[in-house]
Amino acid sequence: MARAVTPGRLKQENTAFQGTGGVSTCNREYGFKPAFLDTETGLVYISCCRDGRPAPFHRLDGLPEELVRERDDRGHVVAVKATVVSGFERDGCFYTREQAACMAVSPASQSDA
Image 1 (tube, rainbow, N blue to C red):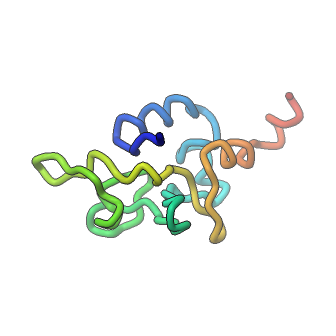
Image 2: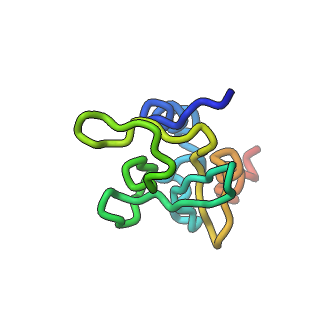
């Protein structure tokens, strides 16, 4: 069974992809925007702040209510549907963290491999 996306899981993913195009700070220059895909519906959601502004990293608080499964006592999202995955949007397409990491490789890095 799929695990729900939580702030802790996002932190684990960021740690796993640290220094690669699988995190926002390393792929922004390639046009990637942090986003979420609901694999059940196929809908992609750009990561947003609570007020609707695009977020520079993955934030759960800006997701629509139909994806939210749990909030804390201050109203912050602490879990979303298990069908939601984090990744990135670029030019209308969704990319997983793995796909973005592969695509956001500098030419210098490729020639060193």
